[in-house]
Image (cartoon, rainbow, N blue to C red; front, side, top):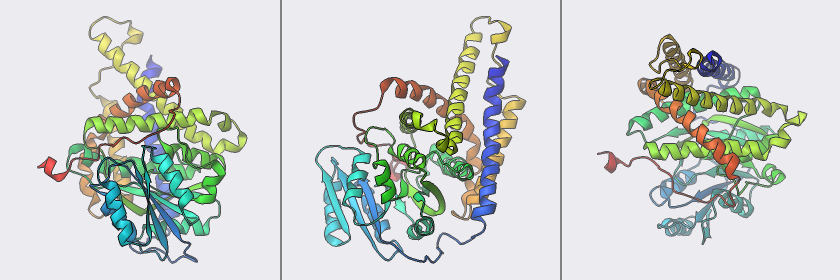
Length: 417
């Protein structure tokens, strides 16, 4: 059992320093070479037209701001295709009004709930242009994001997708403040490190761009998975398309600020990873897919860590009621020197990521204090959702159709007052 307990301690420690080293390498060799601000995008050799795809389901509270952020893009030629997926509020009527006001806006209406993947697929088929920027119906895209994204496509013929840099904009609760740092300290850091590996786990579904011919080569988005972004990322990379991370392509998003909403979101993310592994398990054995092996290894080892954490906790609880054999006795959950070392490592990781990301969001360092709560909240949540998601994915099989359910998009100002 000592091996089990050592694994629960050393794995997060090892991964934290792996991400720190990988992100620093990425920053010094790729990011720091062009220190332009997000408001100062580079001049491109050409400006191919873009089709923006905005799938919507019950987005009346935010879709106007979303479409407006797209219409204000500093880019010469684009169209906007909004997909109203059987919204039960007045999202459809709002989109029709926007289409009547702006010639570049078109709307596709679904009578029945078809799911985000189907909305994106239909939008792609209806689009006029080769390059697609997909944006959630509650997100706000930075005015210069399109140029930052397109620089990868026009200079890289094997670039199949570009994932942007989501930033959390609802920060009224402790969970919201922690997630501000998480998207930098964890998600941004991991994406930078994975770019050094050569393959990333997933694009950010809230803001991602695709080459249409790359999507056609893999059959577009899968309709039967709970996370279309993870699946399409794996399929593109298994077909040897490159996926880039563009930290200057800022996009302001809404995130859950209640535990139940956060649980549902992270459970869906975890389940999507296992579904991708099941769907592509045969292709992954191919030698030509070897650059994905580190991504798969990280998924498998993190899953083992989650179950090791669960077993350790259950043994600790059981040991408070009955006398266990010495080899089964779990150490206490009150942090000792190991907990202090992990906490110190977390703060180092947060400091590195906040330093790198401060150029994209001035004043970002004020959220450093809140990140001390991250391990307590999110490590436990990650372990639990992983333990639930794996049997759910393996035993439940793929869904017949991944339909929309309205997620928790944070607490509105009137709710917080």
